[in-house]
Amino acid sequence: MSFSEEFDRLPLAQWRERSLAATEQEVRESLSRNHCSANDFAHLISPSASRLLEAMCQKARMITQQRFGRVMRLFAPLYLSNECVNNCRYCGFARDNNIVRITLSLDEIRREAAQINALGFRNLLLVAGEHPKLVPASYLAQCIRALHDTFPSVSLEIGPLDTGAYRELVEAGADGLTIYQETYNREVYAAMHPAGPKRDFDFRLQTPERAHAAGFRRIGVGALYGLADWPLEALALAAHVRYLQKVCWKSWITISLPRMRPHAGHFDPPSPIPDRELVQLTAALRICFPDAGLVLSTRERAELRDVLMHCGITMMSAGSHTEPGGYTGVGRDAAPPAKPGFPTIMNAAGSPCSTQASGQFEIADSRSPGEIARQLQRFGYEPVWKDWEAALTT
Ligand code: SF4
Image (cartoon, rainbow, N blue to C red; front, side, top):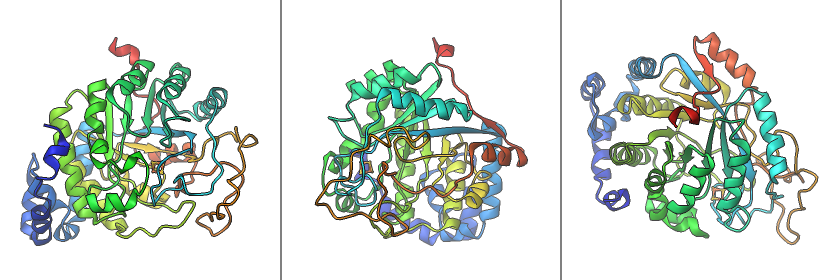
């Protein structure tokens, strides 16, 4: 049975009530267990658990070091295209945003990749908006083939595809796929995705299973925090992860914790998650899913990333650009002007968006990859730029 069939039967409201009513004693008991149930996770994200945050972080740190060692895997996103047929209300690439749009050519992608490679990265995340005509699977497969020699690990963050298209991308050399459900609340999902194929909640929810069937070695999931009540999102996400670890056992499941960031256009997150609760959620996920990878992006500011890296995080992006051509400026001259007749879109600082291709959102940690690597070393972690070689599996 697919997770989307199980999903509507999950006792989310019951878990939420249990979380709200959890006592400090129940949190301590959940914290002392080696295997967490859904109820234990509800306890660990409760208001009562917030008072035991230091103990939670200590346990999360201990589990992370036992399972992963004192290492942090570093990766960089390479944005291929900011074209998109969807109109997500919270995204700078939404189709109604009057931004400058480009799709990089293979040559431009190679130049971007060479710059990222020179920074030290060997783990690359290719990112693109959803546009079946301008960003088809065949284009993505070409990009992967062009980069696979220099990047042993190439993963993808793209619009959901069918299993056949995913197989083509795995055969081209992609080993990971990240797909955020954005929100597990059906009503909020419908309101946030007013147009485009992304309106199909269930097709998106089933994506990790199609990715597993296609042979992706690593599958990343997550919710975009800020769209709906965060504890409910976390409870649904945890149920999704439990399902995937059981059913999609050939793939390694990773969890991302993205929060909303300023972007072209204007959108106030209706349900933001505060910093302290983000730390608590990170620790709770680590304690309940000891073997999952936990991914942290440059959406978070440096000081908070320096805290979170001790609470269960195993992978971090660094030095990120969220606009196509951002590392080298390639494609900047070729970028067509924004569409005439559309209202001018302001960036988060209140200025008109520039004539270069626009980013998906503003990053908050602007430290260079080298600075982040040195910070990790100061804290006693080894930054890992390469941790995967496809040849080892053949
Ligand atoms: S979130 Fe993804 S699908 Fe939605 S507008 Fe942005 S790029 Fe397109």
